[in-house]
Image (cartoon, rainbow, N blue to C red; front, side, top):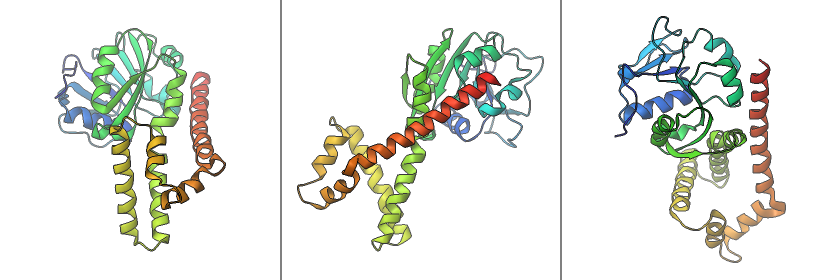
Length: 270
C-alpha cells in the first residue's frame, strides 16, 4: 500500500473528475488513499466512489485543501476555478496545454504548482506520469500521487510536458488504433472478428512486455524477429519503405504536440 500525505484534515480536492482524473482516483483509492480525505468538485458527476465527498461547486467557508488536482477541460478552467479558496494549497494540474504561468496567474495564492501529465493505463498502475514543477516545492506530494500510476518522470523543461502529452498522454489512443488496424488486417486474412481482435491484442501485449523486459532496443528486437528473406522481413520491408512508419508517427505526434501548444495559447489569452 502507498502512504498518501492526505487526511480528512489535510484533504485532496479534485476539480473535475472525468475519464483521466477518475482513473487516477480509482488507482489511488485502490492503493490506500483514504476516501474520507477526498472531495470531488464536478457538476457533471452524479456519483463518486464510496466515502468520497461529491460537490457540484467549490465549498465555501472551508479551509483550503492540502492539494487541488485540476482535472477540468482547459477550455472551462477559468469558469470552473472561479470562487476557489486555495491559499497555501499545492496545485497539481493534469490539464493539457495550460502552462505554469497561466496557472499562477489564475491561482496566485497557490503555494506550489506542478503539472502532471498522466495517461489512462495509470488506472492499472501501468501508466506514465510526466511532471514539471512550475512554482514552489510540492515534489514529495506530487511523487506520492504519481508513483502509484506507473512510471513517474520529472522533466526540467515545461515544453516537454506538451511533448509528453503527444507521446504518452495521447499515445495509448495511437496504440489502440494500431491494434484495431492489425485486427482489421487479420480479418482480411480470414480470421473472424473475435479471433482477429484476440490475436492483435495478445500480440501487442506480449511484444510490449518483452520489449520492456529486454535490455535491447525495440529496433534491435524487430530485426531479431526478422530472419533474412522470411515472413517478418517481408512485412517490415513494407513498413520501412521510405521510412513510412516513422514519417507517419512523427506527423501524428507533431499534430498532437501542436494542438497542446495551441491549447496553451488559448489559456494564456483566455
